[in-house]
Length: 209
Image 1 (cartoon, rainbow, N blue to C red):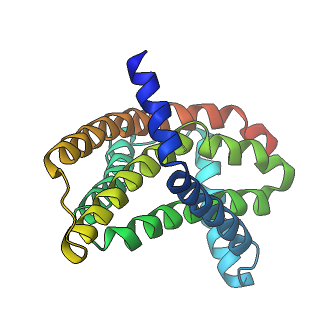
Image 2 (cartoon, rainbow, N blue to C red):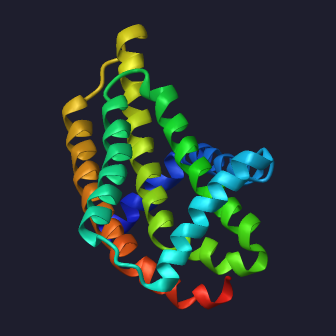
C-alpha cells in the first residue's frame, strides 16, 4: 500500500517528464512508420526480400537456432539498457537518453510499417505480434531507465553549474535498483520474443503468401 502511494506521488510529481518521454516515443513511432512508406523502390525491394525470407522460413518450419537468437536479442536489449544507464551518469544523458528512446521507437515504427506495407491488411496481425507484449514491455523499461538517467544528469548539471547539493548516494541506490529490475524484465522479454513470439506468429502465416 505504501509503495503504491509512493509510485502515485512520483508519477504526479514528474508527470511532465514522463509526458515528454512518451511524446518522444510517439514521435519515433510515427516517423518510423512514415519513413517506411517513403523508401526508394530499390530500398523497399531489398528490405521486403529480407522480411519475406524470414516469414517464409517461419512458415516452412525451417530450423531456427533459438540459443543464438536468444543471445542476440538479449544483447540488443541490454545494449540499449546499458547505454541509457551510462549516459545517465553524465550531463550528456539529458540529450542522449531521449535520443536513444526516440531511435528505438523509430525502429519499432519502421518495422511495423514495413510489415504492413508488404502484406497489407494481412500484415496487421504480424505487426501487432511484433510489438505485443515484449516490445511494449521493453519500451516501458527503457522509458523508466531514461527517466532516472535524465534525472541524474540534471542533478549533475545543477551540482556542477548551479552549485546545488544533492544526495547522490540515495539516488544512485535507487538508480542501481532500477537497473537490476530492468535487466531482469528484459531477460524475460528476450525469452518470450525468442521462444514464444515466433511460434505464435507461425500460427498466422496462413494469411500471407
